[in-house]
View 1 (cartoon, one colour):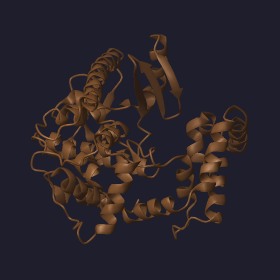
View 2 (cartoon, helix red, strand yellow):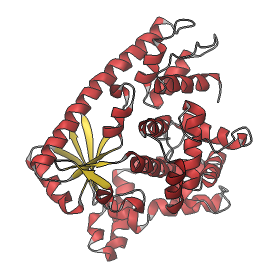
View 3 (tube, rainbow, N blue to C red):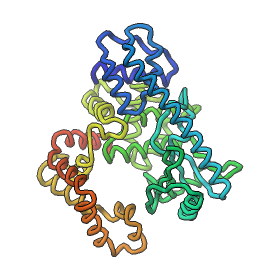
View 4 (cartoon, one colour):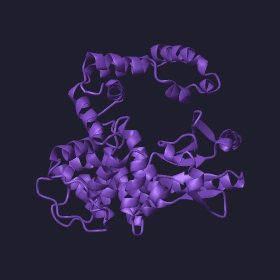
Length: 391
């Protein structure tokens, strides 16, 4: 990382540790700091820390930008709070069991909860309540903006709520998620912090297997670990080993210790593994919140088409184009729900997808194809990182 990126991380670390930020060097590029904050959706946190700096401060224009982002973030936080309360009340009134996961819960673990931003409010409900819940929300004049067999998205109070059924998990470890949660005196179930940490790690893996994961996801790791009293690291890693994510968990927790002084064991010597940490840091910092700042769908399909060698060549790109055109059945079921009852209609779904891509989304499809054909060395580096992380 360069000087600006290191200082960006240090500002976040000072926030997580409730410390005063270190005095910046004279050569800090505050526009770069602002851009990093924006692409990672942490401008309020970084701005809050910058306002505490006494020497070598940014100019008034940059400070104004950060103050504006703090204001926007506080407005968004208030809308999120209202939406969470609406969802909780609605589900309880309709006797629907539910679990809040990720941001709706983790925001409460941050030093200033209003500054923990997020794109969606995620709620898990039982399979048997999935369709009923959606219809009840529609009957309540709520706008369902995206519908699938495992998740539907509701838009209310300028916020997106994603309702997931229990079949929509990132790791089979959570296939019986309600059984591993404690029930309150309402319909709400609470996931304990250790399992929530595993949930977050599994979700980060999902994003890495797509286009990437930003610094905020690792901040969530830090926030959860600080909340756990007497964290049983060895027991936790035994679970991670059982579900085939031990390597990734050790690397991620070590990175959090290295970046944020997270109170957890650091098993990786980053001086001995300098090439790995450079690659790991670069992909997180450059990619932005979900990796899209440096990567795109073309990179995603090339990753899927790569062979065991990790080399990106013409054969890789042909495989990527094939996967783009003919995704596997599991992926197709998310967008063509009739395949759940009639899987033999998969060829028809592929034809429908091709027609949609060719006529309704032609410019998007052309962009993705061009991206696949242009992809090269950067994808090889990313594939190398995924292998190092064993994901």
